[in-house]
Image 1: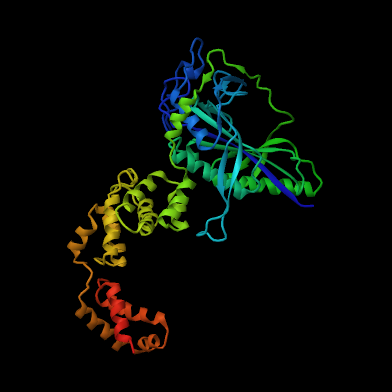
Image 2: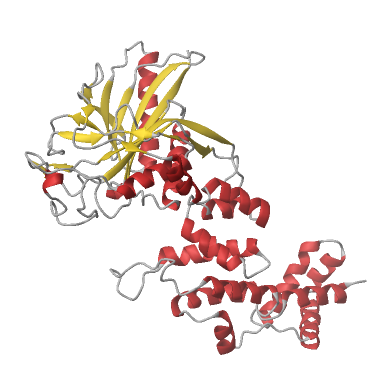
Length: 490
């Protein structure tokens, strides 16, 4: 018998806001432990919560991005449990009236080639609700320490339907969701900083049946690749158990990223009874349609919509759009440069290859601990890149010369025109000089000349190479090609 997997994900996203969900205490990563707290965060008697408007607006924004129905009224509930990560012994969350319902996440499955766009489909969502985050526990051999800096930060829980069926789909879902949220300014979604966390619910069932199998939840999934690996292992474990005639236990398991296997944490014979009840200190939120309409007008273009536009309107290849469209600042840089040239596809090629390579390898200044160079402090402006591409197109410099110049442009901030003038790298287009060099190349390599005359088109490249070498790459390739063909004509 063959089995198939059914997967649902619960993704927790920490919203990028200046203050916490129910108090003006600031948010931030890397601060000394337990310094981002106050009586509200610590649940001291008499401390009352006040809602964060920015968090509510960003939650509506996410709902609109993902095609959710925005609730006209949502309310706050207390989720009661006793655990050291929540000092109040309850978490303010949303139970039966979440801020968003339904929705979908568009995902792309891999094509046959990395350079070919794969098929797309939409994964259905159940709901999105807003809540406050909990503190972080660090466990040692005989002690556990708690840091409440994260407690109270606004947290969105995005719950999918059991509508994913493979580890690759899980990876595609998380990548697409992260790209959408980052480009919309909702969150940085840095899993290492706890800004995006994911729990996976997995079951297997016989192929052709509709009934879901026994669900197992996996925790401790700290990277998008880790989620895919954990899901892949758990599918294999459950499938083997079913083939061996064993029963699957409904439980929560922990993923071990070093050893790459899951281990039991606790059994879940039934859903936890959190004794939800409406929070008496917080009024329900009424969301007027005018409010929703205003936020709708502020939505950025979705990454996949941008990708389709770049391909259809600008003629960009899939390989370029896939590197660009998950990064909103990079897209803005590209569009500024592309608007100054007639060849957007060539601009995109420079951005995704040369610019990204330099950004990934270089730090600002000589101090290795200094701030990393980003688009914000990059010395190659969109205007400077457009100028470089235009100089290639108008024959001022060759592409090879431009490749040599770009790292110096990146490090010094000098323009291509300045460097070309300093180094005397203007492309040679003098007809008489180039004709003499072409004639010499034919004389020196009669075998290549005969092969070209015999119909082997590629043989001309050896002759071109000789001319370019003689001029240190400064001969105009177009003039060289035309001259060689004229001299080689019968």
